[in-house]
Image 1 (cartoon, rainbow, N blue to C red):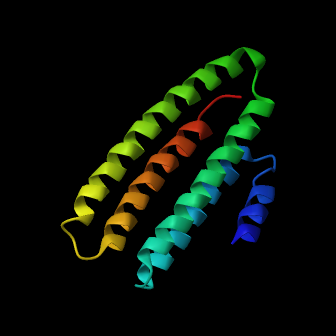
Image 2: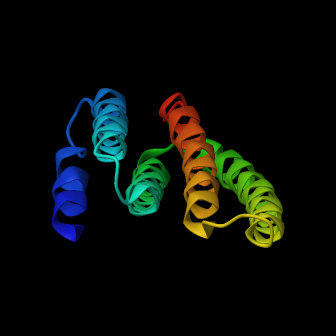
Length: 135
């Protein structure tokens, strides 16, 4: 699974930065939906999707950090730090909710799948926001 992510990262380093990142997001989303529609291992599908989005987030940030105007770099770093804090709080809340649900549900993997899907959506929103960030 690492090879497709690496190939994806290399593909994304072209001149059409935002367009290729949006294409990458669309590709990941389509792949995720196909995996879910197969009807088995939904948690595995969500986990792979989350990891790929997280990888795309980090490569997007690295690209921005290396190309952004120095005056705007500080602004992006502050903004990213604030987002990371919010993300950590949101993920803790989700994890706490899932932990409580595990006690009352038969199949914990469904809860884990939903939790991971929510985390992926949160990361996807950040990647999308970074696509609009002026370099």
